[in-house]
Image (cartoon, rainbow, N blue to C red):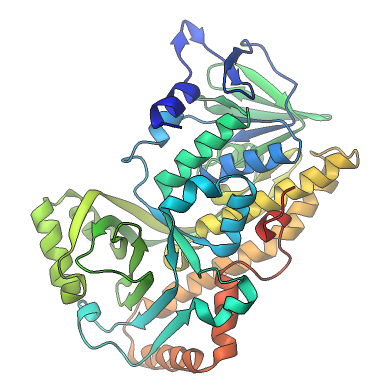
Length: 450
């Protein structure tokens, strides 16, 4: 399906009062009027990566969701909307396959067959003799247990958004966009969402998937805790002067990590951490100055590199919700946990939330339970709360351990890296954990449909 076709299907037009519409199974628009609706099972605030994926999973399980998002889908599909690329764990890609996205994503997915992690001592470490402390992860080591899959797949977020838009269209899921949640009221057996244009819609359950500033989370009275790192991630896509060999590189420098992540067509996504002030200056710098800084900092390793497309800067912080549920409300993705991108696990955590919640709700509705009841929602919270908290704490500790140049700390971490590299069972355990294939996996992450 062309991007223009997707734009046409997902853009609501204004003529006087806001136009409210739905898509049927054939992708044709039908008016639903501006009155309150009670014929949904789930109202999902946020039609981004996590929200749209959850909508597909819920629909596959026989539930009827509606997506509400302040951004029209055509805006989300623009190349300038999101410049990031994501390392999709192999178990997460199984989920995307099970939801029917695999065929459209595979041409744009680059295998990560090896990951090389090095502790650099100073800027330019990527072009100088590396520290003897490093870890090499190789997919061949765990090929007997994961069916020959890579450690993960690198995908540009815009490609995932396009595939999700097409799948949401094909599934006939109603989309209200542009529309914003103004408030949520919870009553016996029902939650009512008031949109900022005054329209109201109702369902037994409301799911907040609209990111760190989640309106649904605030309406539920769910507090968050966390902190900023005083750093930002500078993101750019480059065309390399030589084949990357499906190898991802991560260098830990005193100012923060620098990653070279392989993409299709001999390209790579560069992600490096700078102070927020320096990051904003890099974003605003002329192309020649940006390229000169890149080469001066990382040198020969990037010889022949050409920056393609715009640059992006994303502030880095940790944010964790104290709860995942409230009466008739659940949250997932960045609304529940925002983590440092050091291990590339943020979206994988959010999609695991989506898989777990969809499975809990599907199983509940099949035995006649109220999907918005506290009993049902607590199953989801119990499934995901420890994993989310443990990973967030682990990533935060990892960043603090590596983002400094103190001699005693450097010695300790270098010895630890060397030990991990020499102990094969420990190295394989890290790879299985990063691949998302450990613990109590939802069916979708095992590649099974709901």
